[in-house]
Length: 247
Ligand SMILES: Nc1ncnc2c1ncn2[C@@H]1O[C@H](COP(=O)(O)OP(=O)(O)OP(=O)(O)O)[C@@H](O)[C@H]1O
Ligand SMILES: [Mg+2]
Image (cartoon, rainbow, N blue to C red; front, side, top):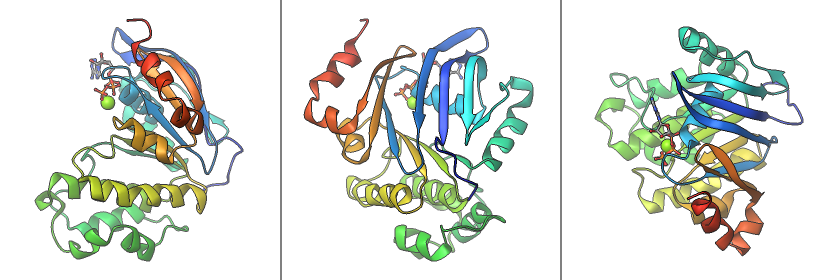
């Protein structure tokens, strides 16, 4: 794990999109080590674009991204790969749905690649404890797993890389509700016991608010609401209002 900065991730006035299209129009938020931020919002609001921009996979048109206190050069399409690698080395992890697995390699091999040369508090034994199902599937190829099992493996592999900022896009997609419920405490211990800053994009608002510390609602590429998760649990109508803001 890399040296801890008082703020793990900051984005200021982020403007980003795809080619000539601008999707994010001035998005700002920050996450401290050991905290879980959930990004909510209607379909097409810009949630995935926000995570992709932080990883360096879209055209950043304006604003600033700071990872562990280090301001990042803007990513351009000609150097997406180099940008993603350098941000990963800073401790940024990104779980995209079913992505990035080596489908011909076994579950165990995929996890081993996740651990790489990194050493830290997330040990193979801890991954086995958190994902007992993957331990049973260790010798199967990643490509032969079900969608939900692949989703679990993507998550476990991202954790194995000892991130200090972990961004998860739609974790519950394709997973049975019982598995999602089991994974929620895993994310909480990743934050509480290992100081990881977690960013959770979720369609299941109540589920996300049940484990998050802070919440941001995006709507049409701007921040429509920023509040503590506790406040939004007590006043859910504020979320509904923010989903319809500007309609
Ligand atoms: N590769 C792309 N090229 C062009 N436009 C894109 C691309 N990816 C997303 N968009 C557009 O950017 C906008 C924001 O999309 P994004 O995927 O960030 O939304 P989201 O909040 O993650 O939505 P969802 O809840 O449906 O996952 C949408 O209008 C979408 O059509
Ligand atoms: Mg999305």
